[in-house]
Image (cartoon, rainbow, N blue to C red; front, top):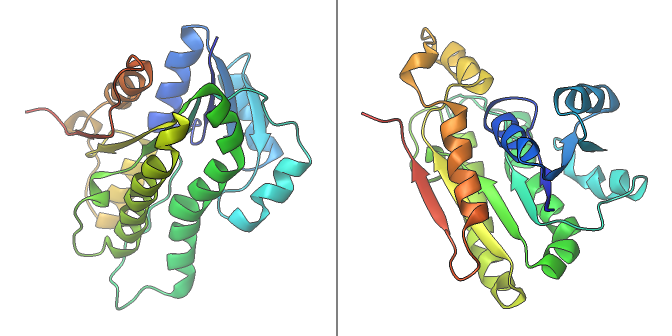
Length: 229
């Protein structure tokens, strides 16, 4: 039975991935930002374990983990958490940059570092749920896209570094997906949110599971997913 560590399992793509893996009988370890959120995740995903660490403060993740029992086995680490705050480069304050870079880039790097020993033992997999913004950017998406472009670089470097250890690394680049984050983006853009226009989170979850379940003689390294015609 495989064990998966998942961030962002409270909603959207992360929740869809967690449900699919739980329903097939895999073990889940879900990251929560605080004890209250951990209780909510445990209730939403019966049988799952939780770890508490705030991705917005990556300098303290190692300290938080030192007070908890980490899983002995990790078959996949799925980075699905993220935040977005739109704004023009000429108007964004350092705090906004730090918040998005910490949560969307530095925290995934730190989590990966801390769990690499377990992933090397299982010859496991790291999946970065990136974004179309990790490949292209637009006006007012500068901070978010900078973090997501950095996440692509992180994945590419990690892939080359861990190839000899048998750790597979996949980046998934979804287009706009119906989710609470997408609703917030529309609010920031001043547009009406119609979830029927965008991909379902379950469709993106299918791509994540496809990468995880691929036989060991192959690897999906980069996968772009867009809303259908």
